[in-house]
Structures are given as structure tokens and as C-alpha cells.
Amino acid sequence: MSSPLIQQLIDAFRILPGVGPKSAQRMAYFLLERQRDGANRLAHTIQQALEKVGHCEECRTLSETAVCGICASNKRDNGLLCVVETPADVLSIEQAGIYQGKYFVLMGHLSPIDGIGPQQLGLDRLHERLKQPGITELILATNPTVEGEATAHYIYQLAQQEGVSVTRLAQGLPMGGELEYIDSATLSYAFSGRRAVD
Image 1: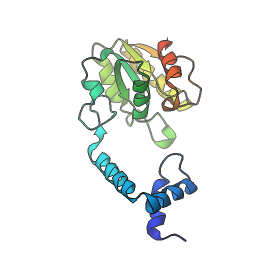
Image 2: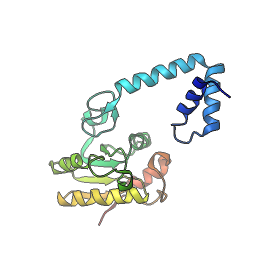
Image 3: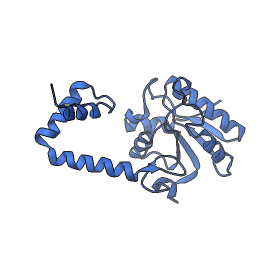
């Protein structure tokens, strides 16, 4: 039986996705037995990130500044707006180096059963953005899951109301997959072959 503090540490690791009881236990004991300096750095960095990282006022991605570097850049194409579910999706697309427009991050997808509706995803803010002149193409890059498709359909209807052209990432993305886990080559193909939504 481990001490209450060790058990709390193990339980804390279990909040991470894909970390089960055994992995959490290995991580906790590794830090306590062999990496106390590393554990201190990790704890400090987590604390700093929690205090200083918020959401970009324009696209909603995670950012240390009020407006993220992508939204603030004058080298990006303001006519292209790519809608993704998470900040990790933005990172995947940026690492692939295939897109030079702006983003809107939903921070999830529509899921009425979980109480996640249009308001929680900031779709009112997205709708206001679509009303502004200058957006020539809205790219739907929600995950190819049932929820992602439902979310994309809802956003498509908003864009239709404002007369904005809508495209969807092309084939190559596996149904049920998540954008952040897709390799750069597949993502690049999906962007270059995006199709109009009807």
C-alpha cells in the first residue's frame, strides 16, 4: 500500500489521456526515485503555463498573449479561415507547413449529450466573424467523426447564411480519426484536395 501522497501523485497522472493505472504508477515512482530535479521543473512549468496561458481573443487557440502570433501576423492570408476542433489541430497543420491562412478553434465539437452546444464552441463569435468582409473561403477541418461531421454541417449552415464559400478537407483522412494524429503528407494531401461543400 503506497502512502497517501504517492497515491495522489499516481491519481494526478491518470487525468492524462491514455495513461492507465500502471503507467501512472511508473511515472510517479520514476520521478520520486530518479528524477526529482526533473519533477520540480515539470511542476514549475505546469504552474507557469496554468498561470500565463490563456486563449487568443481572435481565434481562441492557446496563447500567452491576448492575440496569438498567427492572428497577429500580417503575412497570413486573411481571406482563408480554417475551423479546427483543438489547439493541437492548429499545431499539426502548422507543422505540416501547408496552410497560410487564419484559424478559428472550437475547443471541442457539438455534443448535446455532454452539454456542448453552439455557445460552448463560440459559434456565435464565428458567425460574427463570417459577417465581416474579407473571408473568401471557410475550410472545415473538424475531425472525421460523427460529432465532427455534425459540427461541420452546423458551421456550413452559418457560412451559407453569410454567402461564404465553404470547403472540406479531402479524402485521406480516416473516418473516426483525429487531425492531430495524422501525418504531414496525408494532411497536406487533404488540404490541397479540399472540396466544396454542397
